[in-house]
Image 1 (cartoon, helix red, strand yellow):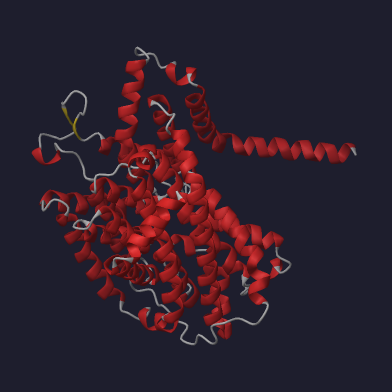
Image 2 (cartoon, rainbow, N blue to C red):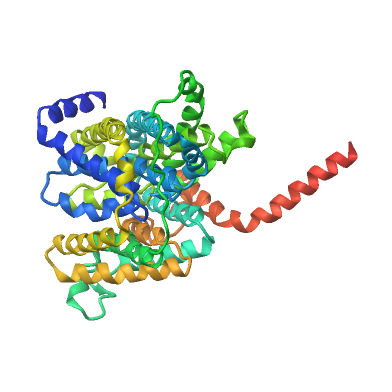
Length: 504
């Protein structure tokens, strides 16, 4: 895989256009990431149509740059105005903003950039080392294993999304139903098209993601457009005191390990990784009681975890075809548009493209570090842009992006409909991410489930007779049952511990 990486890297260096695409993607990613209300997923969704005319390698270089840079960009607004630009930066504001209020905003931004770079590099290294082995193991998968892996991915998504597991399952079920719209691939019978020829080809993924993560976010921000943002105008010095960086290395390494591990779990996402990393640093740091008042470890740990999640989330997406989070779900849509299906065959049949993904992430990290340092003092002016101007521009991008897929107004209507659906789901506290995952994984689940039952002569025991499929099914059931049993298990453990203390 190193040979593929070096070959693709040499090719990119020989083509200034590809370097320019990576640099442009990083700039747009940082800008979109640092603007409150524009998440990394939303950035990818509204910029995805830009790549339709590009080659698969060029498209991935641009989108990976937007992906990686927007993850870092979310910490900028969290530090300067106490509003996270992305969900992964929610924890960064706890110590980043207090440090900025002390006149050390420049140092806080530098800590964030350094930790993001370290986490991103380590995530890329693990991706390059682990992904080929996972893909090799996945080559042994057959339809029962793929079906149960898909069920496991949907279950983990429902389990790990905020709120109740039931609401996560409800949202995922809606996505599964949306994935069944159109002609049945096996029987060629139209399903759920309501007599409309516009729905006979199914519901396109890209208009759905633009609506759910783009237009719905615009509608949410309109509700909160009156919020007052107080920008920290004074950055102070950028570089910290001598010896400070050396003291922060353990927190960055620990955060990177957490980010890679959590990111590799299907649907876990960066929000969980940064929360775990922050709690870990608070417990291990000698200044744990001071967390929340501007402690650098409270920035470097979560930020390294946040960016390490990028490499971790790409592992299940590229090797199994299961998105690691909502951002890799949008990337999957990009690959499908360009005729590439993520999964173990991607490594066997398109090894050069896999190397291009690694190069794209590496270039994104390099350009993010360079632009992050060079433009750090310009971020204050950027955050003073009127929100109503940004919302109008984003809405136009959503409409144009949905139409540009097939030059079909049906896709615009789908985007508008799912924008309203996403807004209503947010108002009802129903997570929207499972819906997008269900739409992606639904056809994959149906195809492999049917094939498994054909091979097994209609017997569902085929999923129990194959050890790996049975193990994945058991893990899925455990994830569903655990939330209901967890309170009783905790009470039993507490009572047992109390009994031991009393007997002693």
